[in-house]
Image 1 (cartoon, helix red, strand yellow):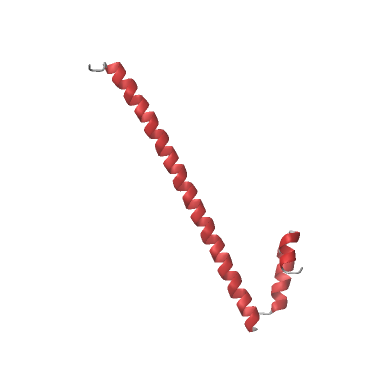
Image 2: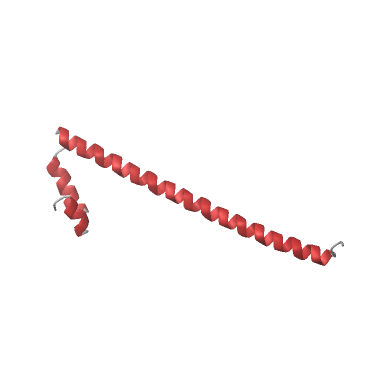
Length: 86
């Protein structure tokens, strides 16, 4: 039995709403993944910079006292300060 135009419109409207909801969910997932990748890249950059700075201090290229002063000025949380014996 053929659907009436009103029933067809109602069906298509429901399908459209479902597709729009699906699109919203996919877009939210895309944004979440992009944010996760960005945070991971930021963390990796920080780790690499820290490793380079520590290596330069160990090699004597950079003054270790200067690094400790920077850390003393920059670190506020007791847990963070404890990692460096401050």
